[in-house]
Length: 539
Image (cartoon, rainbow, N blue to C red; front, side, top):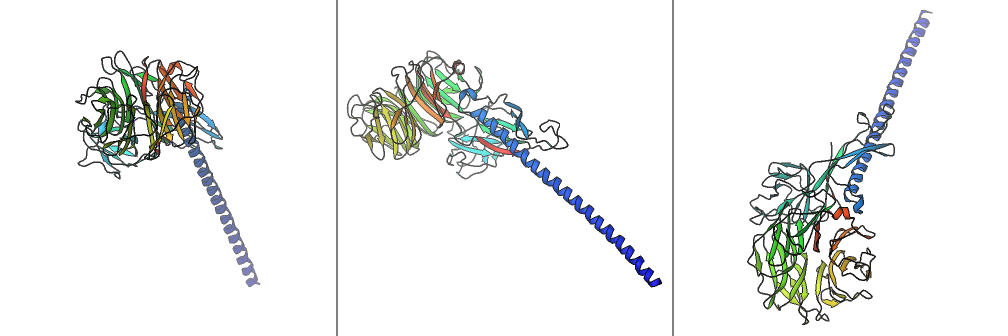
């Protein structure tokens, strides 16, 4: 009997122990399930917040670089306050100086040229540059993640489709490559999503579901040059200066004197050249244009093109029995006096596909026309069937694909040899400028015809007349594109036209009010092409 009671007592104790164990396991399981659910919820909210904050950056980038000029917002003061998106929203602000270094640009300070693979760049000083972002040396874009007093670090070379190349070291005066920067720093600082404990979602005091991310956005800078009666005729696009703000064309006080500028070629935000009548050579140093004295012939220079800080060519009217062709090596402009087959052409335009492939075109007063080709030295090419034509513009997509345009509906195409390529059905007038985004996307501008400004487009198969503003007042002289959906054309009577990917428009007067009221002969732009964002990071 006692044995049976003992067994019953033991079983009761065991049952209680099992009940307690099962209860403990249940509590533990409930805790673990709750913890995992909360962790999973937190992770989900975090991911939501991240994508919302990213959307804020995309929104800001679009506002800075929208195809429609009227939709663009200056970096200075950019703010998107608590924009709602889905279950949450974002807040975006801009910070940092958007313009190029106001304290003067820096240059590479190394004992040998910067290699195409270097990921740290030693310079004279990084004091005037942003702590991270994007820089431009010659035509190469580079992202960097940090700086110290004399170095850019964490460099990613050849971004946004630009080639990584070597660059010359030394001061600007000694021919060194200047380092340009023009960026807007944007911060998407909430990316909030609602929670059960804080259902308001985006709220500056809400500690839940936030991600703060930032990036730098590379901006546009352009110059248009032309005829003026004082201080030269130079208009400056997008960078804030003493005469106005961003997203407008400003005048740019330069030099005293009445001079005509015929062509401009920008290398980077910190380097470029403009040439004109009476042996005028102006150099852009990042913050100002300065006149550079030369000993080249005192002639009219009509065209300039630069590949790098130590590699530019300018062309002009005939100099005796040969045309004026001068070359820049980083320190000096010098005349080319030995040209195989050279004759007394007046040259009006030059364009390079690369440093060893340039073409210059012009006029020879009714005689057999001659084009000039640079492959490391200058030689001539006699394009068949183009006798007596005047060529005003040239552009090369590659070593085997170039176009030249000129008077009386004159089009020449190069595919290894130059040949006549009439734009069938197009007006027989003077065409002055050409720019190509690709082999299937080229723009040509010309003189006024009837009530429309004259703009043609090449689609890879044929030239066609493109709808243009019906001003009937402007001879268009030059065209350039930042991207296939963002182009500029300039010309007589202070003409500024813009292409937004669909239509060409006359730029609203408020955007050009501060620009000199002159004829503009040439326009050149420095810009991101496809990936303006750089140095993304999370705070």
